[in-house]
Length: 413
Ligand SMILES: *Cc1c(COP(=O)(O)O)cnc(C)c1O
Image 1 (cartoon, helix red, strand yellow):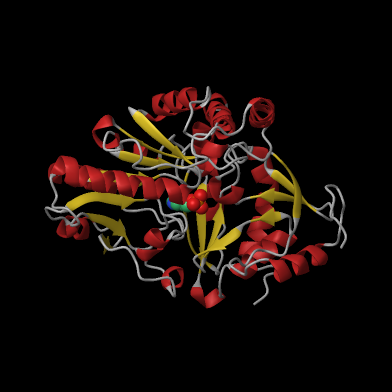
Image 2 (cartoon, protein in one colour):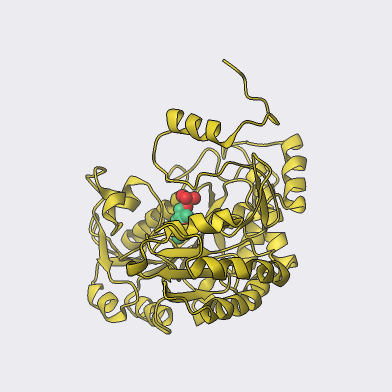
């Protein structure tokens, strides 16, 4: 069998067949094989250049192969990569301090993937409910929202409202109550003495870039405070500058009790996630309660430190705010018979395709033909979420192509 060496180039079809043959079929990617990335750009194995408007679901806020983040990766890779938490390492402490100072919490617990950080938050808040709030053992309830996306573990898919995410994977973890997203009265009605947490995305990314009504998060925070319920914000996709603030909750002046971060925390290079909270919640963990072999490893911690530095020093949140506002205006100005709505905040933008015009998929395929990579979400929505290092000039360059596609040019129906 031929050994594929790095640098060897094969035709796109060969790679597609290989993945079809050897991979589980748990994704439906666009038929494009990428081999290089730089900033907002990626290149496929045939040398064709594309603008990345997905950013690996916002894992790439800092852009592909950011030199500063890669330098941190390489330097740390030569020194020490994994210690496990059986020993200390000289990167985790500085990382956690810098993260906590940046987002304003007393403690952080490092994990790897987003789903793990969500699981960590669920465990912490349940235990806080029993130990601090005094909920009877086994009775803790966490309120979640319809159309949520919090990851793919069995506990998390158990409270998904997407049938496909759940189908065939039960039985599921009890203790979750679902309310409609954006409906504050439904949230209030779901609260009882055993409610310990409210797990919510400030904007639902996978749900289709769904923005709740103004005042929803602040009202929810108020109800949480009054009822001693921990507000748990899943900022894995919305956080770290994406929506034009460091955390999307800042748009409503809300400081959640728990903030869950991932994706861009790893600078588009390495999986790093974390749960942040104050001591009152984090102190429930004692040695042996929770852990991860790779969580807090020095390689990931060094990468995350550089990833945070880039977000701050390149002012990515403000860039997202300014460029996003302009970009959303430009998209809204395209009056297309195929578009039901353009919505977004910062550089998290969704264009909802009318059901009468089919799904968003052929629009994404037509964009790909024009060198723009976007991915449909929830059937009807084309998401535009480029790396935050993008410039207005680049967006101006691609707007005519986006406009043509949204007007239906080259869209297979
Ligand atoms: C991507 C995502 C997750 C899951 O993160 P993984 O790293 O894929 O486990 C959880 N919540 C939100 C809001 C996400 O966008």
